[in-house]
Image (cartoon, rainbow, N blue to C red; front, side, top):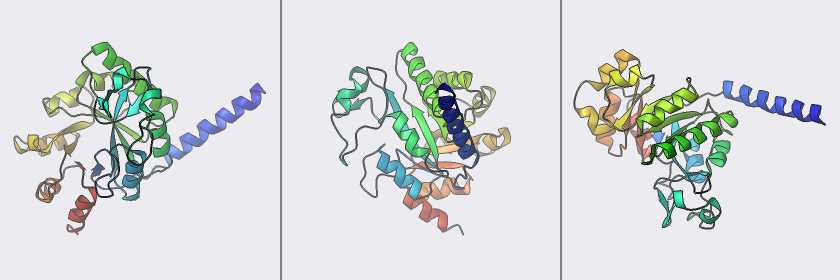
Length: 259
């Protein structure tokens, strides 16, 4: 019995590793902010919004992670969900209140499992900062542990407004791809600390020589949250690697005009 169980586990792990090696990530700069939700009127950060981002062939689908009072990692943008503070509410209570499309609030585990069923769109995991450093470490550790347990590393890139969170991720997984959101660290600083890139509000890049500096250092540059076609075109002209938007369909239209 034990031998059969070990064999099944080995086959499963081998299958997941083979699948990860076969990823063919879409070659475009489009990252759907909280999934592709706006055009189809889907709930933000829902499984449906993730699937729509995949259908649109976005490079990535961004989503936000919090931890419930009983330690369950859930996907939601704000610290509160339908009037309940996530950190003070059990998952059992949270899931009693469905999203407008009938989905339960997604767990990180379920979100990753759905995302791993496809091989073309990255899962851009944002760990939301909390004031308590120990709690921040706990949420970070739990998030990385979940990604590792599911063998989802090839699909996942990490972002956060917490610099310490990203440093901790690299301690736990030196090969992880991480990018900083807060806009207050130089390109040289994030390079020195082993980050893959900067991921700042697009207005930050209006000052300084960010595009040349990041390319010189081998960093990626992502801009958020870009919903204006004029700003999209400016970033395309500057050869930004990624553009995070609530309007992925619009960004694809702007990209088509480059051809």
